[in-house]
Image 1 (cartoon, one colour):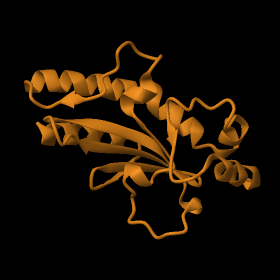
Image 2 (cartoon, rainbow, N blue to C red):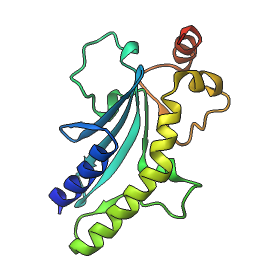
Image 3 (cartoon, rainbow, N blue to C red):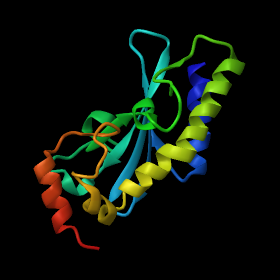
Image 4 (spheres, rainbow, N blue to C red):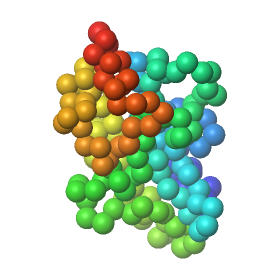
Length: 162
């Protein structure tokens, strides 16, 4: 079932212009990468989908590309981003089920990615837009800032020109 889930997500992201390496899909938008990562569970038979943004120009260290979610600058789980947009978004997609049930869960996931998550991430990938809303008007419950301090990101955005 894992192969089916990855195959279906791969088809979806490829149609949207994403590339894939390992279990990370990425799309370059200007100076920012929109990222999605399949993260298998260590405890149960299923997976989480992590989504976020990565700013290569903020990196001093050389990172194997594409980076895993712990190296992104903004990161959130699929269900975390959907809070308030859909009723009871699934945090975890179980793989111990029939293929029909899995395909139904994946269809819901792809619909939510297309309708809510990708537009949200693509909007944030516009650094001029991000500059306008961060940090005061940014929803810190949907995506978490990591690997950089808020003050450093504000300074980076302030100096960004395009």
